[in-house]
Length: 451
Ligand SMILES: Cc1cc2nc3c(=O)[nH]c(=O)nc-3n(C[C@H](O)[C@H](O)[C@H](O)COP(=O)(O)OP(=O)(O)OC[C@H]3O[C@@H](n4cnc5c(N)ncnc54)[C@H](O)[C@@H]3O)c2cc1C
Image (cartoon, helix red, strand yellow):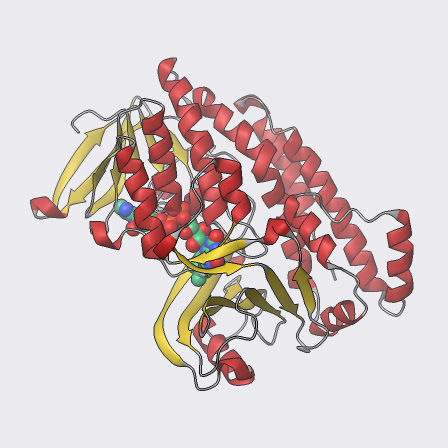
């Protein structure tokens, strides 16, 4: 494709969906990835994805070899490993663990079938500019011996994941080039064959506590009757030791993993903060991990990136039809995403800060007294905050006597989650209001200190 209208850098879940939607909208779309074709989709990941993201986007459910396991519930463990919270019967929690390569290959195939031109083994090295605006990308093409190529387009989409290959080279007040290390989870993940079958092969397990994973959590997700995807994410470069060393001690502590055999292992990083303040700048848009479109409490980003990819394709169509590729021309992507799913992610950013500040003792107490219940977690995840009714408050105050500090923190987090949601409801409809809006967001985020 000599003159693409849109170039998408990165064929992960977000890039494939964005590219597909652009092509479905009639835009000539070129998708580039540094991986060889058969490796597209490979990613160190927990592999869990909720059905709700497919229902929201119209993307087909995973089927056949794409599916490892159905997920229909979770057990959340406090540091004491007792009084775990059992999340069952919430259909919005239903989903799957997927085989990442098969799932990724399907998303790529759907993009190609929609008309996207895909080039593998093309390493994007940076943006090209015309008249102060992004106007294309340069990349090294392995099929041409690594020769550097420049390709121009009307719009460039950075879908290169956590690296943000285009984003991190932009010098524009709208663009957050780097992500604070406090807002990044470093992870170690293993695929393990267990020495006994899982008692509940549709139940995910999550483990909280500073001793397990400072400012993070450990997970064991079923991959089969006797196989799991297990790992640890540690935020803020937190604590001493690597995520791998935390995982090795967790493995020793948790009997289910004893005498398991290793099938695969690897590390990765994921941003765990609210989305970038602006998902666009002149001639460019960001999607997926490159845009920090990830659930801050569990680091799940496949669904958020797919949701954003659909919106972006639709907005791109309008902007290109009007030939308005400035930030203002693309602004509607910001508005649609931030006032919708982005609002949830921002509210969960506050919840993450609360979880990270709670001591192991308080966490154990909170689980024992059920200060938060499964319904609260579901409501928070839905973006409805932690809005406790008066009766509820009273019941919990009774249960929480003895840890008033913890109750106060919960109450404060509930208030801040409500405030930030409201602010995202009024995400500025043009670039002019962004500075003031972002100032107010930062005020709320900075006051999310709980000690
Ligand atoms: C350990 C771990 C566990 C996770 N668990 C879950 C989970 O259970 N559920 C969930 O929903 N999310 C999970 N996530 C997050 C999830 O993996 C990401 O949010 C999601 O994959 C982001 O998709 P993406 O398309 O934005 O980026 P990516 O999947 O990272 O894709 C980026 C693509 O860009 C390509 N690329 C990068 N740089 C260049 C370049 N310079 N030139 C060309 N191509 C380039 C890459 O090859 C890749 O194909 C986890 C993340 C980690 C690290």
